[in-house]
Length: 341
Image (cartoon, rainbow, N blue to C red; front, side):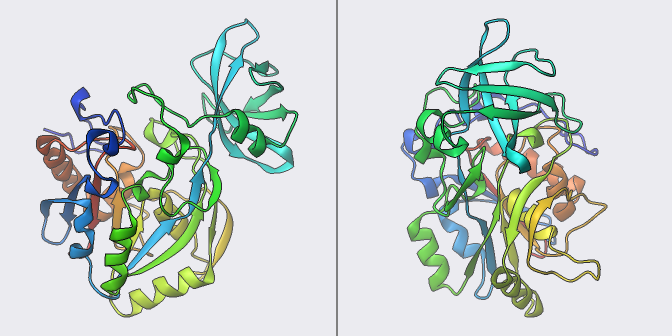
C-alpha cells in the first residue's frame, strides 16, 4: 500500500527500472506502455503510447518542450587527485554555470581539472543545494562547443550501457540547453504526430531548459530558463475558451506554462527564469492534462500530479503502475493524467 502524504512513499523494485532504451528491448519509441488516469471518473486504464490520439479529441492542444539535451557529463580530477564526474547543469549570467561534482567532497574555491583540458573553479554553493555549485570554467573554446567535443549524456547507474546523444533527444528537440532530456516527449514519433494532426489536435512549442535531476531528490526545484511565445499562449487560450483540453507534455512544459501568468491573472507570453512551484495548494490554471513519466518516491514532481489527481488519486494510480509492471526513468513508460475526464 502506498502511503498518502505530502510525498508518496513506495518501494520501486529493481525490475521496474528501465535499464536501456525501449529500442534495445525490441520496442519502438512509441510502443512503450501508457497508464491513463482520469480524475473525474477515478479510473486507471492500460494502453500503449501509440494509442495517445485515441484519448484526445479534435481541438485539444498538446504543449511540447523543444529543448535539446546537451552532452553535459565531463570527466574531471579533484584537488586530491580523485577522478570524478562533473555534470554541467545550468548556464547563468556573466559566464557562470551551475555544476554538480559527482560523488566527492568539495569546498569553496576548489579547482577541478578537466580530462579534456581546462579547469573549473567552484565559487559557492548554488542556493540551498547541498550538491550544486556556481562555477567558472576556463576552457580553450566556448562551453557548448567544448561539451559537443568532449562531453557525453548524463547517465545514472540504473542505465547499464553507454548510449549516444541521439538516444537522449526527443523528436521536438531544437534548442540545445537541457542537462537532462525532457523525457516525456521521447515516445513521440512522426507517425504519432501525423495521427494527432490528422485528428485535429494542435501541437505547440515552448522552451524550458532542464537542469540536473534535483527534482527527483528530496530537495526543492531551482530556477530554470523558459520561453513561451504569443502563438503558444493564443493556442492554449483558444482551447480553454472552447472547453477543449490542454495537455502539458512533461513537468517541464507544465512549469513553463504556469510561469506565464501576470499580476492580473492573465496568461501572457513570457521568457526568463522561473522559480514557480506547482503544488496542490497553488493549483493549476493553464492546462488540465499532463503526460509524464513515472517519478521516484519523494520526488517534488509528484506534487504536480497531485494538483491534478489529488494525493489519493496519485497513490491509486501508482499502485496500479507498480502492479502492472510499468517501467520508471527516462527510458520507461508514461502516464497520461486527465483532470476533466
